[in-house]
Length: 154
Image 1 (cartoon, helix red, strand yellow):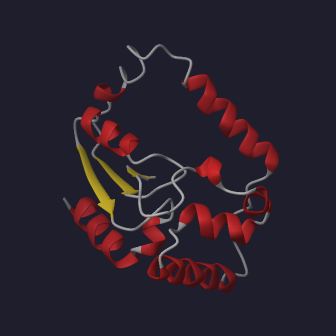
Image 2 (cartoon, rainbow, N blue to C red):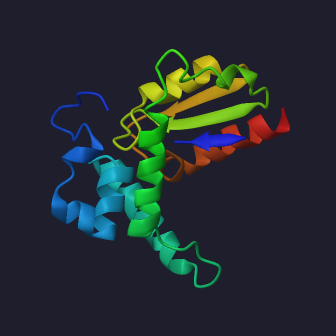
């Protein structure tokens, strides 16, 4: 199983909720500002990702709709109602090896969640990628693929 999934960083956005209404309504701005950090190298990786997306003409994944986003948010909120003492109880029963990939400046899913997951999954490997938000795999493709190959071949 491969799971993908900010701290104070000199004026950089720290949470997803800090995105402006304009950024949240424009799919390109949302992707660039939620999945990539403001750094030049990260924004360059984001632009390369957008170019790759435009190359695929068939078998494209359907865009996230407001209905599906709302359903995901409701599921997250429902999970959040589980008492903290039981919240992670089922994770230690998952024995399948897992590669957890996360950006160290992720504004969508706080990086601490990757550490919590890695700590509680008995066969987890955690890869935290630098200067990366929610698009860490796309920003650091070569590093991601090298680690994914190692993980899958082990």
